Length: 227
Image (cartoon, rainbow, N blue to C red; front, side):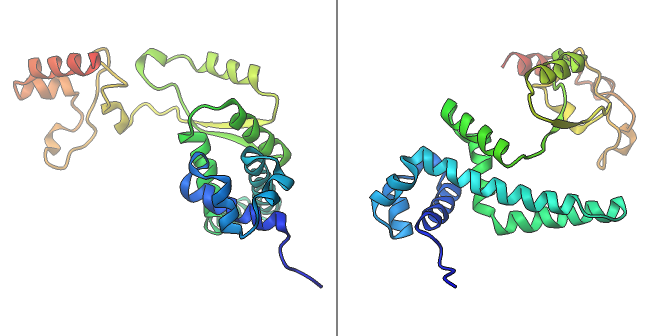
């Protein structure tokens, strides 16, 4: 039985590697042809254009990846064993399909805005019947505190697919030291300090007063907030 990859798969294999290593925008049709060792006409015959190649790469990759993840998630057994199996499968898939994961990340996080790419991404996820999970959902910054209800309502209003999200209702975090997220309206407490353990439990304002730098701290906070 002939198991040699088809012309179509050779093109997709080459494109997936190139898109994942260089980014979609930087790759040309000629580069895909050189990597696959196939003529330009083969690419246009099978996919029409570069966007068609991207769509096919994403469709193939997401269908295969989410099928394997779903199989791991559907296993029988105690919850902890199932969870461990799921994450082992996820880690193996990332290692096996690293260019694909790099491509997905670059398209979602770094690619300049493109309606065409957004449509291609959405359609590929829908065809894969992927379970959408929005991770680390939170209302960052003091001006957004208390906005969880409005945020969840907005997500419900625009979502036509089953989706889930994990939230972080923590009251304390090192990220609150980021002055882009807080200002003088927020009291920042230090829970522990290696060089100054005696300051544990004090607010920054209290520490600034104890060290006679309160005015300098206020000026710094105001300056950072206006930057």
